[in-house]
Image 1 (cartoon, rainbow, N blue to C red):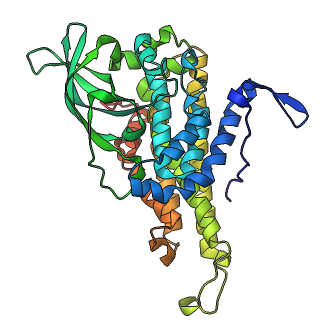
Image 2 (image 1 turned 30 degrees about the vertical axis):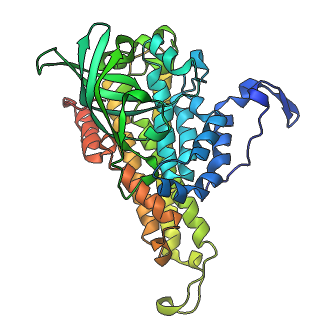
Image 3 (image 1 turned 90 degrees about the vertical axis):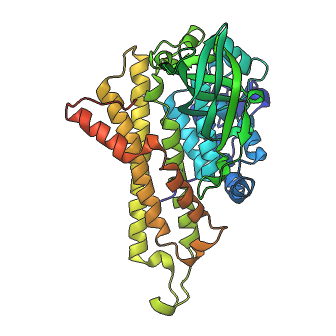
Length: 424
């Protein structure tokens, strides 16, 4: 059945004032706890659902939704403490992200990617983090990680050029993290792969986003032409995977020791699982008291009394619960491994990557079960079940969630075969 929704959490000024509730004093630390963030995210869900269609009409997340998530402190969940963040673990981030995505698929996708970019930014050299957050601790970054651009070394940094696609949330971000091939000057020789951090003033946005799902993410293309990126705003793959990135100088906690590819797909899977939960809740709400009009099924009947529909709801509920718990189990395992000062094994990393893909597969199956029985009402543009159905199928197309790729990787490692070239 649908997860009960709690009421809004009321906070004190700046989360610094003590508050009395249920016979005890609630401190600022309580107000910044993972449970408090989840409650705040849950309180935003009704408004996010009401804005779903507006997000599609605009082709981006409405500014009211971004402002509400910033005001609730949700983007601080993985932001480094050194720059005003909360630096909570992956599992806490997942819980918050699933709530937001259950309200709106596009908003959830933009939130989870943007919130996890705060973690990625924490790996960059301290000077880069200063540039992003010192003037505005609420500044956000988007990304396009495929290395479709080039970076050529010059004195003091790099000359970066290229074209990048699928830049989710570009309209609400001040920075972009872009995948680049590190080139040997004057040649076509690639010496490495990295991430270039560039400010909004350096790139041009090309509105190519004409899609059937996740319409409100505004995942447009961007282009750079010979932009200078100082050395401290480039992070190599080797640094991001090392467990000792440059940012660890000011962010020594376990969160920033997680190898980049061992965790970055979590943000995508989180959004998908949240969308499935939202679809289930909307479906239950729409059919609970709905009565047939007769015709092929005979006299008017309450749809919720149909055993076939009950079976669909039962299977979808179990699948979504399983997906959620699978993702949380793996995220908690990653955090426990980092906190113990150990490295993730190949078996752990392959399992986690496979589990994320399988969780998405479960959720797509669950939403398909629901949409297949939604009836003619699902054809209308205002129907939220069909919007979640479109959004979840769009999200599942991401290469990092592709079951053929991640499932076979997991199977190969389980069988004792080489993992192959897949980065995980």
